[in-house]
Length: 368
Image (cartoon, rainbow, N blue to C red; front, side, top):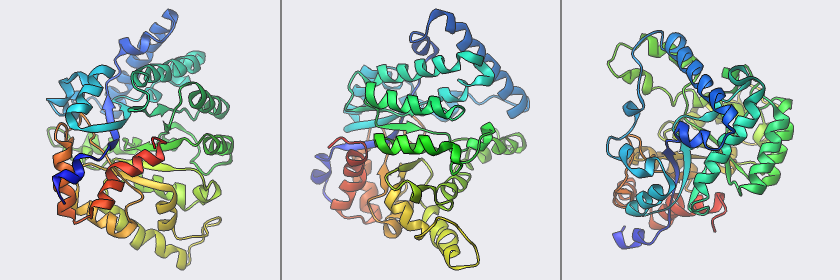
């Protein structure tokens, strides 16, 4: 693979991050709601400190970011973001908030104000993307507490904000909600199909994982932070083995930051064989790996061995590259060099490298 062939690709990162400050959010809310926002943040932090962390050391944002990248203006404002992307040679990015608003914008913390604040939060994300609506794609938050409201929000975001994707929690049960197969979600899945938005399930901390945090004796909770990928196996199985994705064949779900190496093993050894054993999966008519290839995808950063394994098993069409800016695994500002070296190490031909780092993202988010 030559450097020249990769230099002309329009790289699309399907996972990068922005720190939406309290000031940025509150500027899009009525003044009367500023206190609601602040109070919910305080309550959420008190709960995290007392219950989740059990009074142990707080992990700051700095524990999860690259020291240089996290201080770059691209972590905070749209002009800086585009300049950081230009230095990195990246054409477009999907942007996730560092601290998802959906975690605190809910009825239990905000009472009857939560819907207005939720829309304000998404408006704040839209204002960021509006700086360049082609190159900046925000992963709009979508609440699952009230499906009628979620449906209206999808319609609003698609029409007014030209949204391309929405972020859902991968673990609705952590919020006391049914899993994705439940009939209450039918209007939402139908609407998402109609609008053509892509669902993003980003790596997140499952509630039960905090027990590991409290038991982890290492200084920076390295055991805890190294296990976040594992619960995504549950999310993938819930989408596929319940027949939910087959029921909505136009729906697309991307798993963001799951790691690739375990996925071929998971499907080849656990999911696909169960179709031929004594297990019954009503509504599932094709091997789970076929559904994954047709309707799902997974992102990665630097993982040449895992990339090769996933490429050999799934092919190129369901793999999506990302920079993960500004987290420790980021390849910023050397993404093009890393793309060349990683794909050379993985032995993937130029045409499929172009698919994985550019064309898949351009296609799924309608940038072509």
